[in-house]
Length: 488
Ligand code: BES
Ligand code: MN
Ligand code: ZN
Image (cartoon, rainbow, N blue to C red):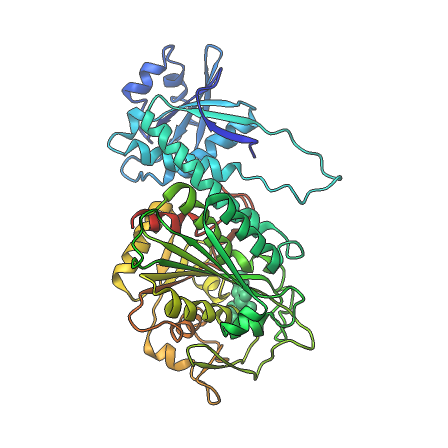
């Protein structure tokens, strides 16, 4: 929406004030409302105080936006993301390029830096533009260079941080949006390498003979039918002075550049949108961007992206094939459309055997079942390690990227047993699909390694304008994982 967003005082800045439902202006806001125009405007019936509802007035020539914050008792900092988006949309509509945001008085005990961060995130996410696939037949709209500023230093610093985190999430969104004929497996590897160069991460891409050597059987088989060869991308962040013995946090992402279903082909247009089956990996890349540029945690972080295209050809892997993994587990393929877990298994094996992780968090658009269960409101979280789960839930709370715990139980693991091999990649009984995915993955995690699987199939994209998002990708995971590492 915007050309750029900067935190600095602008000329003729619109004054943005907040108020709680049923309350008038606070003292500080009254001090800024010298002519009483804002107080008068709040008497209008339209000033309902609903969160994000904007009432406009003028104080002399100066535009004033009064933004509702909902009920005081119900207010939480995260609401400022959507409030910022509402303010940003209004500024854009009236073509005002500068705003002075003064919430200092009404926020009371709320931490100003936290409030600024949420506000900055909301503006930054709203500002995302991805028009590189528009051609000659589309006229370019002129875009504002927005300046935002507050008299609170802490709020300004928070906004800077929020804008920076939004940039990481927007990087994720742009990758998600990139069509599968452009965002091929090789393109994803090139993007990871470019990110590494720009931010000082190290990057290694396993492909071709490397995959054989590492016995990445999932990637080899799932990727076989495509001319775009599969790969495993490994990125590493190392803090300065990290002890050699310090265990890394490992982040894993499913990066299916396209999921046609393979020979178990998707039907009835079920394929449309499957360019976004790489969004787990895109979320992890966004998180690595934030980790390298904003968070800079004290612990090492390794990212593993399992990258392939699930396609069809005479060389495609098939239902009935049996795959042997590097940890010795054998898998009978019953459905080539349950491909995500097959490539993720390679990453889990490698992470446990080679990286010796402190813990593993994995993101994937794994099942349609999780969309049925939780819709677009929560991602499905599978994690039986209480400490790790609490960390993830705290990061979820802070980032506003919601997770809801679903169960893992031995009975679900038993459901995955195969008459031919050790396990099936999918039990055709149609039961508990999202849990089947998690149960499958559990066979590739070494005893004692805390791990979490987050199924983001319902939350990685929205169908229409929602909060700071437009129809399309949300960049889900970049901010949650950044927040997780911030607390390490
Ligand atoms: N990538 C899909 C899951 C998906 C579905 C993501 C809809 C986003 C929206 C995954 O690879 C898949 O095809 N899952 C199957 C699993 C089944 C064959 C066991 C599904 O959910 O139907
Ligand atoms: Mn699939
Ligand atoms: Zn898939």
